[in-house]
Image 1: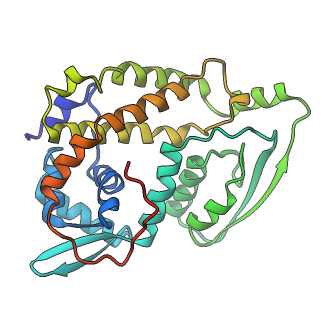
Image 2 (image 1 turned 90 degrees about the vertical axis):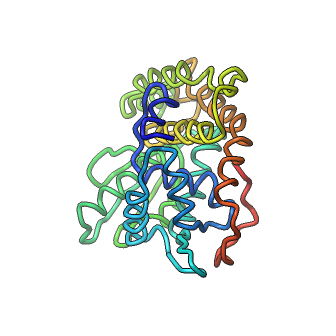
Length: 293
């Protein structure tokens, strides 16, 4: 594939950063093969996205230094393997993306009080993104609120030096809850973006469209839509239906996403397996509970 391939298979064009492609490929494929990949195989897959081999090696090396991977040699090949931190991120991320919450709401808001030790700006931003990913919104610099209690997962992933205290609160009337949600989350913009997502991808999984694509192009398309959809949980708090506008399009968008990912799965895996068919060295991490996405 040429460097223009991504533009050819994604409409409108979604420009992915190399590290985003790496996370998506590990999350959608490599994690189900033991979590390790030869650097040469990774470079081959990323070439379908127009990424050069040098850029792949630089990105993988940088992500290893950041703690996302470990690396080792096996014979003549160098392998990159998911770290424990990366395994946790991918497993929690998969639940947030694929298993949107449909539980009945108990009518309780969950309020978090945060105390920071001497964190850097980078660590504070990481904390902010983690809280937003889990459906919280700030009321003040160290006070966040969400519709569900996510403290157990937060304690696993927040940087060292961030201390949490949580408690539940109720409003007197259910209408107050819906108004509160509309004031603190930009649900109107999400409605527009979900509808745009539906318009762009509603015809992607048709047989007529797929017949024009190679297996490699199918994998690229599947990666692009996965990347685009996984951006929604950073903005969509996954509120209970009691708090959402009528005719909320997020449910339909999630259903379409799941349908397309499933429709493109077999041919995407065929492309992946043709490249990553060599046996990987025994992994230090196995997870029999994983279901292939």
